[in-house]
Length: 461
Image 1 (cartoon, helix red, strand yellow):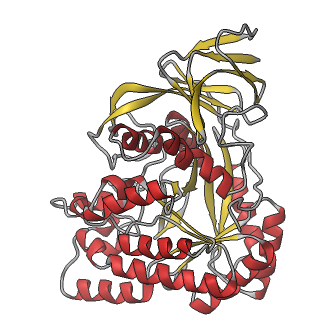
Image 2: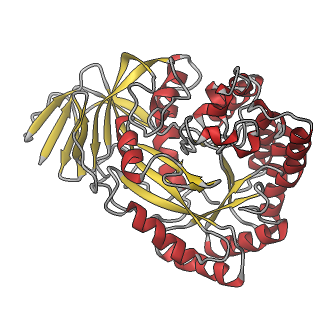
Image 3: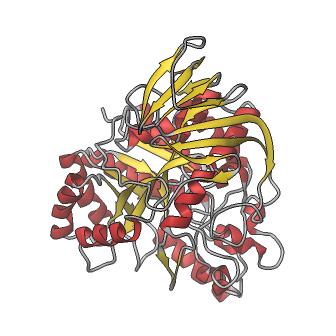
């Protein structure tokens, strides 16, 4: 089936122009100068609207085990919610338990996702057990289209990797061209601060933020950068939240080092004040790294403008307030870490356009084009151009909406952005040419989403 999207403003990372977009089957067939007659099975009038490439959320955790429970969204519910928000591809994390192999882990995540996704998906691999065998298996993962590997400087006893283990994995990444992704917080020092707070009778959610100070994110980020410099490995800092960490990334990038970083909407819009809400309300906002004092937000927006922050992902890892977050009543260290957000990333970043923080083109770049290039999916994805997958979003920049748990589609019982009034709203979403959101209704189906094999990072020098 063919569809012609007429009268819209096509926005790519490289510029904006009026054009009609012809979709034929699963791909974009042509961009047509307005006024030329083109035949199509269906015509969609996008007058007054933007036509943008589908969003790519490069950091999600569907069905992720954590602290005796698992994140509330399945691959089915999470990717359906993503579609509602204009995201047509996710890259989720396959979590290697200690003592298991990377390839068996990848098989388990395929079993979870395959046939259950509403939009396309890929995987990163979490390495929690660095051995000769797992280092060798990195090569097999790359051959299977998974070429980014996440490690942790936090969570001792669970995911934590020593500097020596990180160095060995980075040496393998340098050899293969893979990208090492890093959760950069000094977990050893943080565990001491957590133990001291609990010993003093301080168990409220705000302590989660106070015991993970930004200086320890900055220190770990600097250390990861130095290890990457020694080994020559590409490095991607995930969910950067603090100006100290951004300073370290900026300095490295200024020297030409292959260092990249993402931030998340929660660090742009929420703060330590949310963690300090009365009673146990602050538990809704427990994620790691934690929300920071508000003064960090201006630095993060500046980093997005200068490209020292290259991507905005969500770190979508939702746990219901009732039953799940409440596991940490009286002991903040037992609150499952994670927040929902996959449905609202495109809208929240559009507020940066509305407020003059970023341009429309930069908006598209950070929510779609850069993650496509960073993780080896461009030009299949991340651009409105002939030959690309027809992952297309018609976006109404003047529509208004209020974010609420009552209306969102994520399988979680609260919204971190409850009551936020935003300008801009997804109108229509195509995933590989199939209309999945239209006229305020879900038109997609479970199993439409396909696994995306990815090439290497296209920004490496």
